[in-house]
Length: 246
Image (cartoon, rainbow, N blue to C red; front, side):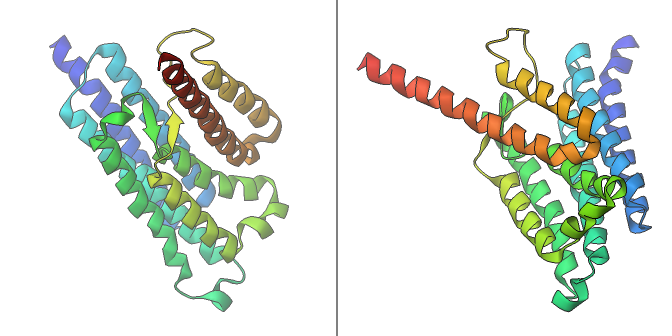
């Protein structure tokens, strides 16, 4: 009985992820983007803890992996697309540019699905990510309504159809890019092996403490930058070792 309960705990948490995403979509459709944004953050918390629970309880299963991806498509693909769609509609110049441009927001859902499909079939992503993880992309998009709510002056930049369109293109490309990015899973406490993770957590904590949600775009940029630096140095070290051995 206990084993059966342990087996379903991670899947139950994954279902909470999906439920959060569905509720968030309702709020996004109603125009309540702040609550929809919080739903993304809540879904991300559940997404973290379902994997954590699976590791702690040693309860891994094929169906759990599929459930996780299906939930992520909704919470980190469709929901952020719905938020972005509403942001397009709030852009003052949108009707002067194109009445169909706002639908480009749903490309985020399409490329998030592609990203998740690649993750499930790519053996290289057991310990690292190839392309921007969908939760990171969703959290970035979710930060926009919260930034506008806290800093109304920044709405002129965010609610610009050209800025939003460029953002969609860049993020879709990053989702499926052949770009190695570090995972935040700590396998040990060794400082040297986790130095870039600790730096990311340190910078994130400081920035969020002072700038709150406005820090999220900067944190994502730092995450990508540190990952590039980490893998570039690792690649150079391997190349140097190979030259010395020849």
